[in-house]
Amino acid sequence: MVSRTVTVADKAGLHMRPANIFVSRMAEFSSDIILKTENNEIDGKSIMNIMAAGIRCGARLTVICSGTDEAQMLEAAAQLIENGMD
Image 1 (cartoon, rainbow, N blue to C red):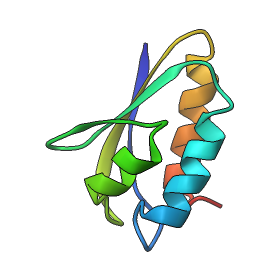
Image 2: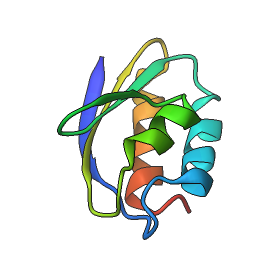
Image 3: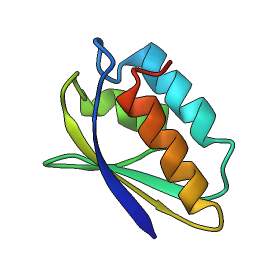
Image 4: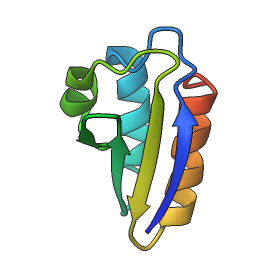
């Protein structure tokens, strides 16, 4: 298991479009991913869970990945979140 704390850079937060980009990219990995907020642990491969969490720009998230390609997944997730899904 690997983890990193990141800050959401996308101006819109993680609503539909950025959540879709994120989930699509994370689906390329076999590992599991959890996005941990102050109050919730969210399945990082579930667009509905991410959108329902209401994660806004500037929010701090701890990204937790576990599995065979966890390091690569963590790096990809952190880059997406910190670079505004670009």
